[in-house]
Image 1 (cartoon, rainbow, N blue to C red):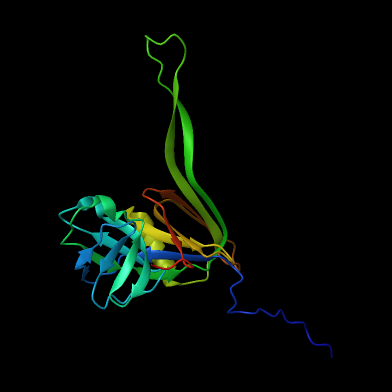
Image 2: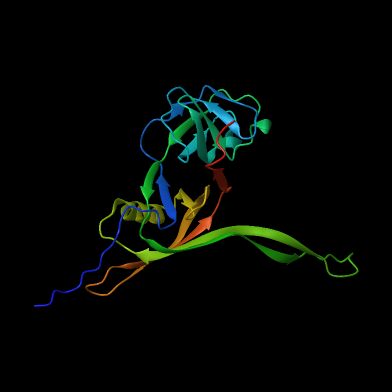
Length: 223
């Protein structure tokens, strides 16, 4: 009797791009004892517990301009570079804190489309102009994700809650064979699911980029 052929799937190798979704955990923030006036700024935080490529939320009451999501490049157990923070303009910050974000590996996406930004021509002609005058404005970019759900994964519940609350989250993407990690602050603008009985649910997510992008060179390291 002939045996039915089986499909063999090899797991554990890095065949695909790496996509992570981050959420704010309900844990206390950690103190930063110093931020250098360099580009990028170097943070001193005793036993920070981070590793290169992690994402954090950084905040300060005295200088709210630095508040935001960042990637980190770890030098040692007590210091790390805050990728995306230009310390040359922040002055002396003594009350900075950081929160290590909760990471969800998002393996469900089969398609990823990134539009980092868009531009449009705006007519700014006045009555005093002899001919038409236009200016170019930059608009927020977007990210589109689609794929198949694996049932009951925690990342799905998190994304649904974020979409309903219209909260901002942080995602990172590292392309296959690339040394760069790209970070984007985004808000979910569309959350669609579709499927047939007996099939996996298909999903489509539309994300609007609503903050500064981050780029970490994992091969460079802190010097």
